[in-house]
Structure formats: C-alpha cells, structure tokens
Image 1 (cartoon, rainbow, N blue to C red):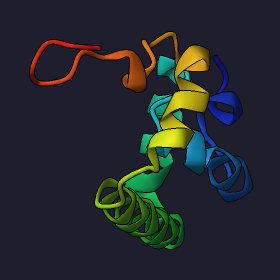
Image 2 (cartoon, rainbow, N blue to C red):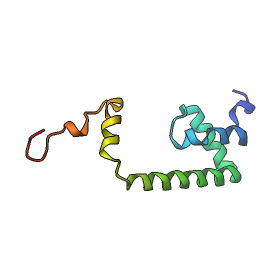
Image 3 (cartoon, rainbow, N blue to C red):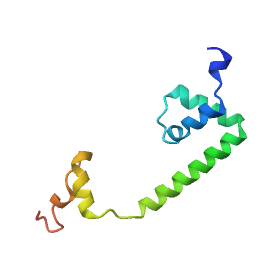
Amino acid sequence: MSEHLDRMTCEEAFRRLDDFLDHELNPEEMRLVQEHLDVCAQCTREFNFERSVLTGVRSKLSRIAAPPNLLSRIAPFLGRPDPKDAPDADGSA
C-alpha cells in the first residue's frame, strides 16, 4: 500500500468516528482511524468529546425503564418472547 493510502485525513477520520466508537469498522479501518487519533490532537479531542456524549447518553438510557407496552410492541422485531407472555412469579401466565 502506498504511504498516502496508509494515512487517513482528518476529514476521513471524522466521518468514521461514530462507527469507530461502535466498533463497526473493518479491522483495517479501525487501525487507520486509531493511527490517525494517535497523531492528531484535534481529532483526538473530537473523539473524546463524542465518546463522552455517547457514554453519557448510554448511562442515562440505562436508568430509564421502558414502558411495558413498548416492550410488547418491539419484542417480535428483536426475536425475543413478549414480556407479557412470561409466567408470573407464581408460575401462571
């Protein structure tokens, strides 16, 4: 690979930050973004900011209980049994 193809520009890295954070890039793209972040302070600041926002949102969402009717509506799309069909603590459905 040429030197140009082995290096990622700030614009290229920035476009991939969300997927990088979610580990949705292929291994080569993950490596290139990480290498860019290792040498670019501006992109590293942006990455740290986006990571902190994502961590904060995930933390807040994990403390919010979804309404039971929402879980019932989305369960079939997730391939999970409907929570309202689960047996009660006494074994009845």
